Image (cartoon, rainbow, N blue to C red; front, side, top):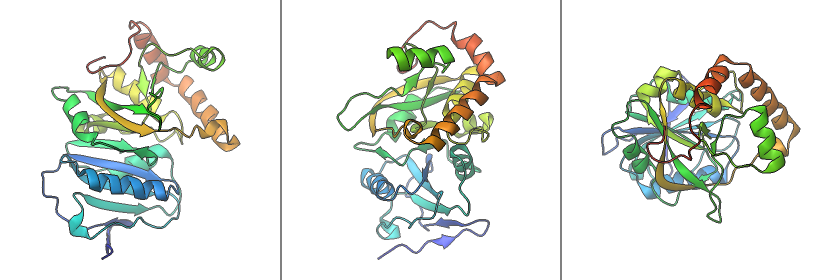
Length: 276
């Protein structure tokens, strides 16, 4: 039997009407840009893993595409909401919209091109135990198990040149990409979510820097996800233009200037659980 979602009265949000069997804890936001089979596989993995801390998943279809097909509503271990955008929005705007009014204790931003072989959510929640202001993230690997460079220093012009031309590996973790980030809902609200002036790139940089400026911490949890970044800005001119525009906005922002002063004085250390 296919699911028959109902339409949310305040927008075009479809909600699969089930009552989770466990107390609300984590709401997961996923945004699809015609990811099709990747979304289907990710949702099937979420159902199969049956994380005891995930109570709700919000899937935003940013462009027209068929909604994924799952089993009967009573077989889902979480409430599933499907939002179909009338017009495409940016990365940050989509996640902000999906997570507005969240009542769960934690929010999680999750990329559609992530593969989950084990439940990352419980370890991420555990990593935040006793942390008033923090954001947890997993280790990212590619399909071959090689660790990806998701932990980065502030992307100054010099850092980017050394990285691109010399292959220099960052030694300090100032920010992490937003393929999978989990943090307390109270912290998300305090930061105001993502800055929607960044359309597709540098939202995660700005977000992490604002977190750090408030005394927050980035905590790497002992769990892996598979994420092979598409790096579209290296292949598509429109993505390259968005990337450059976002970098210029970042470099001109007071957040960047303040974070440069604060974080460059920090001894270079690779991220681990509890690393500030």
